[in-house]
Length: 258
Image 1: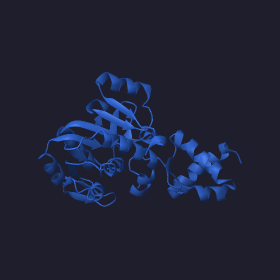
Image 2: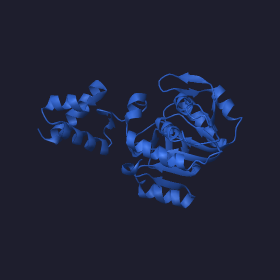
Image 3: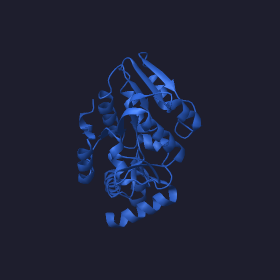
Image 4: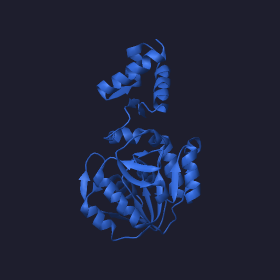
């Protein structure tokens, strides 16, 4: 069976089951695991699926994919992005780390930092950096979003307004071709906008998959950022826009991630 026949059926299975697995598809079509991995890579490159550990899911539209799948999605790229971003954060600075698996990757690379005040509305970040005795941690409080450990709501924004951060590290669910940063939860977006207001510099950490995703709520624009950390070059028009507005873009080499 050719891939032109397999691809539509793979999409249909994903729509029916919510997720496809490499092992399941290989058995279904009677082909090798390598063949299915190539099929899923092709479909992901075309924006029709998103790769997760062991398989793929449909791209998000108005709802986000599950946290565990997001954490596994492009994990090596996120680790490299996290390392590059953490390297740009000096010791003895105040930092806000936002909700998301990419800011969590930054937190993991800050375990050797010293003298930082880190404020977060991400319970996973707090758990990670609890292992760094040289880092002062503040958790904002707020309504707990159990799906991913995020804290959102009025208590969260009131806490954030008490600070002025040297650096804020944020993620996004999608980055569209107009340069808009997009997300799913309006309550989370409201918190992120306050974070931007209370920060001297804003770093965006985002892997290339966000360029092929969609989300309904506008957070900010590339123009509102100081640095973008990613794993593949941005499209030419977005790269030119960043250069024009003085937004630094750092592209991590995933193969060189220590």
